[in-house]
Image (cartoon, rainbow, N blue to C red; front, side, top):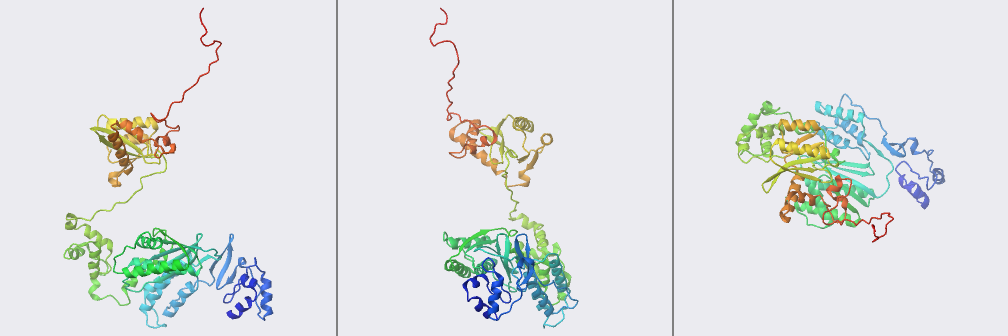
Length: 553
């Protein structure tokens, strides 16, 4: 029937352009031709059709319910969400999952969830009509249906136009996912579960997801594709391949497989004349991340398999104690967290990584001999507002100590004050003078300064202290960079520290006065000593006397 309708509509070029044929519906663009004209043309060939209906009125199209929201057309799932029956079989589970995802273009997290449920029901049953005697599967089904009732992800935009698409790709140990997005609206997504016990490296799986994302974008006849990935390795591979600026750097076991996939991607881009660029995003920003994840308790159920636990593991099914973990960790060479996790889970698979990590940290030998380096939380030191956050430190130059205050805002303005003594009283005296002169900042980053006298001063002026050595071990890089620059100027020019500070606050480039740190603080433009010429002033005074006239005669 589809062939007959297509043949009839293709008789006229205008009709073929206005009314493309689908399986059981005909979508008519009335900007080109009215629906009544298309209907009359079908009747002339003996094809009787129903009365036309407008999409904005809420009509079923291709098994979807199309409706108008705002100024756009959207679609949602037409069929009602199924209820969980009291008796489950493999056939019923597959039927429920099919009704939820079916032929829908956008399903979100439902795709990976239904795939995991199908894999689980296959593991616990042998035939299609065998009853499911698995409490965990029933709980997983109830959890999924409850979440769908609250927020069904199967919905999206109906009208998609243009040849530009954003392809978000991601992969995990469970699945690979692709999301196609245009102007903030998801137009299609897809998910593929990875095989059980898949030995493929995660970077190779991420590359497979990229290839699938390109293939999916080509089905939408896209010419400009913006790829988004959260894998740093894949980002560099794709960037080097597409730009040709650098050779591919990989020496892994799957090197040839990686090069083969990159060559396929390069050939697709060349043959289809695609404009492809790659962007590195975080996992939280990646729209395809939800397609590759399910709740952790579901993964734990899948790892248990269909066989009941053996009696030999009955004593260690919950957790191993720290002493038991150390009895495995010490004879195995005091290995790191990853290797110890492998050894411990050979004995008790349910032992968490956190408990293993805590046991290794309490190991005296591991902390005494070549301990692992600590990782600290990174922080951005720069702020937007001027004189909001100031980095304070005490530095010395040629045997004299200076109190330095460096603005962490856009200006990088700095103040250096000579200290007669390196104690709290001298520092507070200089800080009070600066506060009276320029007002106190809201936050000061400093290495120490914890005495009661200093605490009283900060409370008096409402200053928030941040001791960077304790909480931000990377230090105040802005202040340290300022120290180095000013001391370099003083050493190279053999000038004093105040003069070096003066030259430091001059413009940063060769054309714009606004880039000077001083000009960012002061409301007047700073005049530079020895460079800006003082303009001559010609004064004209109204006087009744004439030049060289004798005043007294």
